[in-house]
Image 1 (cartoon, one colour):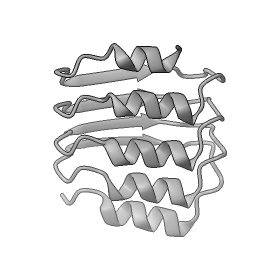
Image 2 (cartoon, helix red, strand yellow):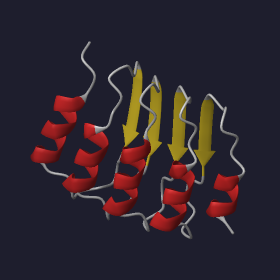
Image 3 (cartoon, one colour):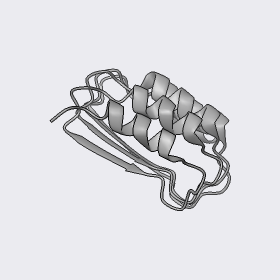
Image 4 (cartoon, one colour):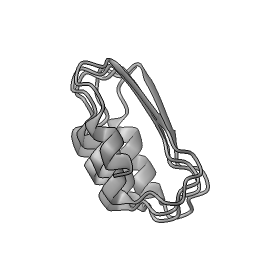
Length: 129
């Protein structure tokens, strides 16, 4: 039920996926993992908006990072106002950013748990110009 049911209904041949649950306080890593496991491998555009939800953790970010399609050219992730993410989660996402991405929009605003180390890692893995 919930996000898991939605995830099962995602067609495999979708090239653009946008999921917006901004402000929902009911979703946890379990729901996030269900959605990201069903992201189409052929997707060129991924837009996930879970801003304002504070129940996701580094576990959910790792699951998301591990499943990002390799050929995605546009990535937008909004997890603003989540205080559970640390450098560990940011680094997991940074290391899996597709090299071919021409648009990357990461919103972790309102999180004060990231350090310079996490930002350096992110900078090191951003696709080169």
